[in-house]
Length: 101
Image (cartoon, rainbow, N blue to C red; front, side, top):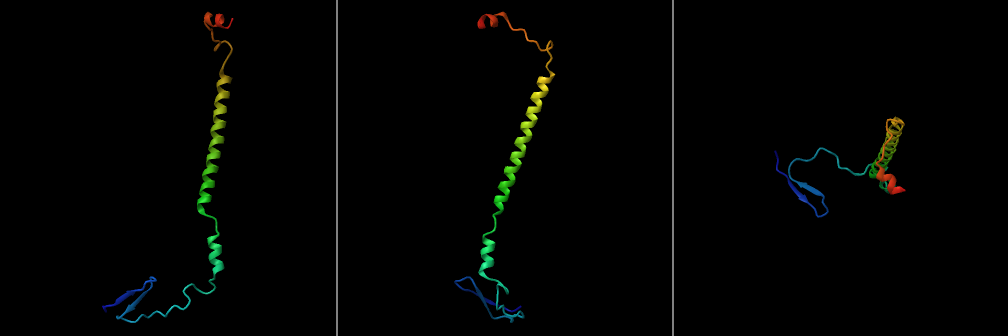
C-alpha cells in the first residue's frame, strides 16, 4: 500500500497527495445535469411530514371520541331499558316526605 497525505481545506474540501493516481475521471458537474435552484426551492416548499402526523393523530382522536360517546350512550340506554316498574321501585323513608312537605 502506498502512503497518502490528506489536506483538509478550511471550506471542508480535501486534497490527496502522494499514493496512486485515481482511476475515476474528475467530476465536472457535481450536481448533475439539469440541476437548478428552482428544484431546490420546490423541495424546500414541500409539506412537512410532521403536519401529516399531527393530522392523523387528530383524526384518530376524533374517531375515538365518537366511538366512546356512542358506546356510553348505548350503555345508558341499556341501563334504563332494563329497569322495570316493580323491580326497581325504590321506597324512600318517611323523613324524605317530611322534608319536602
